[in-house]
Length: 149
Image (cartoon, rainbow, N blue to C red; front, side, top):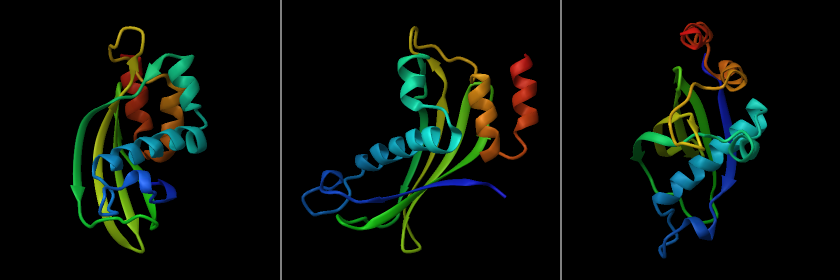
């Protein structure tokens, strides 16, 4: 069974358009917050340190979004992250935003590890790959094989 990382949050005024509905680009801000908290709280990899000291970036290179229902200011939603697959340099994740059992938003993202010094893709660092294994059952063999190449 796939393990998920869940992040409850309140929809704030800053997330919304004048109608009080989440303005769709704000969902991407929320998903980035989710990834940062996943690294910090579940993987034990300090996201800020990864960026500022290790100089490892994790940009979205592919994105597919489905907007099902509006979320409104003041609602408490939960964003859930699941790892779909892990490659040598990429992580495919599925994100669902839901409220009271109703799906509001879904996203499929491909994140690629990059050097922030030259902007080129790099292999996922070993400690990060190892930490992600707990969220991606069955990928540890793939990770080991790919990192040997």
